[in-house]
Length: 415
View (spheres, rainbow, N blue to C red):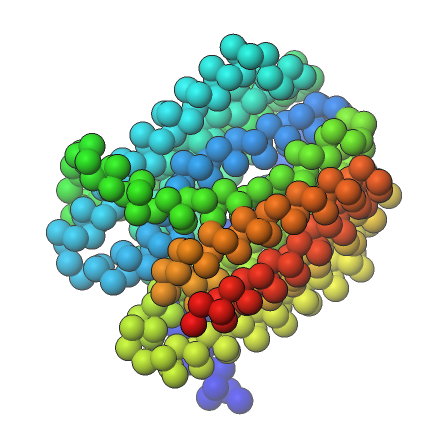
């Protein structure tokens, strides 16, 4: 048994998973420290508006990422030993994402101010748009391709520490709500700039501007991955945005307490995918049997881990909410008992996702994710309108099952 476990513990994939978990561990710790402060200083209504604005800003950030986080690490892993190709690929992705961030931010500000949308929280949303630039400068795909995710964990810890300190010292009351997401995005932008500078110097990457025709070529080539990313993000965050139309602001704030915890847990299946993708890509190119064996082992481990997470958080939800919110909120604890199993149901689809990404089956991914998003929106609308936050929580669980079935069916049908 020890002989079987030893190589796993020493593997790059395990190291990647640990670093990503530590990265998320920092996020959880900061959430535990900062959420009680925000929940008490901003009260239910503005706390819900801050959370909602962050969800919208993160959706815009996903537009900026344009699917490069899906195939960027895989492509970089295959050319990592070629200095010219890796420099070209990195510059193309970074420049393209930054240009997209300028476009998205400009359009959002124009729509918000010109058409009077989001009247209740327009100012908070406007200040939240700095999060979009943080996404544009995020070097995660580079560190994944280089298998150097320990740098990400350190940078994230520094970013979240800065965010925590700024909120603690400068967010004192309701009038400061607009600064919460601005501090979050601002600290991310600053740290990502420093990290990118280090990466360029450490691996002798020469920065160069990308020709316009190359940007257009990248946008066309990654369009289906982009559509898939939007659909996936809608599936994760769209329900919360819908919920505002059916519940009072107080309930929205209480639901967001449980949602914040669930969103952090939801990242575990994503981490596993990111951890194994580089090695899986290499095995897929070399030996299909080796690829299948490798993926099967990681998949089983992920299912066990995420089921255990669900059970632990189901049993401890009252204490978790008390810590996160600074007080016990029965509604939030009940919702968390449902949402805490999202990581397990999300884990069901990891094997399908890895198979799709290593083969770059963009058509399968696009169809499956959009079909899932449409079904999720229907289920969430019905659940939210009839049962509020409880209905939305159940709808999100069902959507994960639907996602697994659709990805599996379309993948099988295409092979």
